[in-house]
Image (cartoon, rainbow, N blue to C red; front, side, top):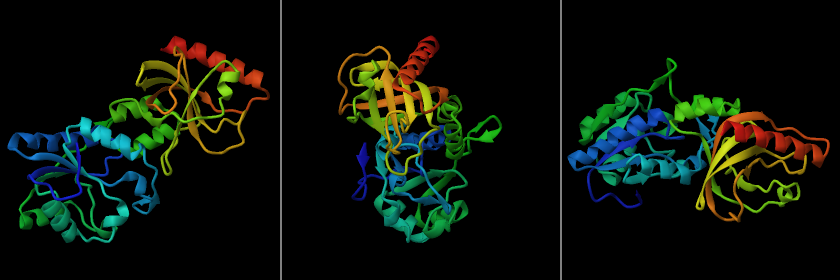
Amino acid sequence: MKLVTDPLCQESAVALGLFDGVHLGHRRVLAAAAGGREQGLVPCAFTFDTETLPRKHGKPFACLYTQSHKLTLLRECGMEAVYAPSFAALQEMDGAAFCGEILCKKLRAKRVFCGRDFRFGRGAGWGFEELCTFGAEMGFSVHEIEPVLLGGEKVSSTRIRAALKEGQPREAALLLGRPYAVTGAVMHGKALGRTISFPTINQHFVKGQLVPKHGVYISRVHTPLGTFRGLTNVGIKPTVSEEKIPLAETHLLDFQGDLYGAACSTELLEFLRPEQKFESIDALRRAIAQDRERAQAFL
């Protein structure tokens, strides 16, 4: 997949959206753009680097995934090119300039796909109707993609965030079309898990990323050495740490080895219990042993 810096050499079919989470609704837009390949167009996505977006519609924004993970998902959805500037790079551009400079000159768009609620330009001041008008003037067609409904409501990143904050990974998975995952390289910790016979791998959330409800989850971990069953604590480890930085700490149920530095994807499958501070390390060890039994039965 090409990350666009210079103007494309071929005409394109462009999917427009933030695509945070690349959920079922996003996938419908992306699939429509991917179909442009049949007309000789390059399937392309315009999005922002979600790690650079501090606010959305005037409210603080917490991205579901890292930008790297989002790009991987866009490639899996058939995108052959992605233009993903920082939000600051385009935030002062008006609607006409966005269509002329970005869609026409940089992406050479001939067909453009988005939902009716797509907004663009400075202060999100332009919408779908204006996009159609600009398209007619500048030589690209605009195609509205209907939202995906689940449970009678529109699938949205807002619903997914709410589900994760409430400790409902199954609900989030239905909306995403796959389990929610924490991705990134395994980082060195304090190796305290080994001292209580439950060695773990640690993955950090990036700045500005949504952190699911603190607690213990049944998980599945994809690693370069295979896929393993896991038990993941999302939170700040109050029993053994004074730090307040949240992370995902996972005990692999059937793995022995070293994964430091390896890129792993930890899927959260089922919420077991809230994170809590135990009165002693022995109490923590007993709780983890019980969590492990429940996880093995579930998996």
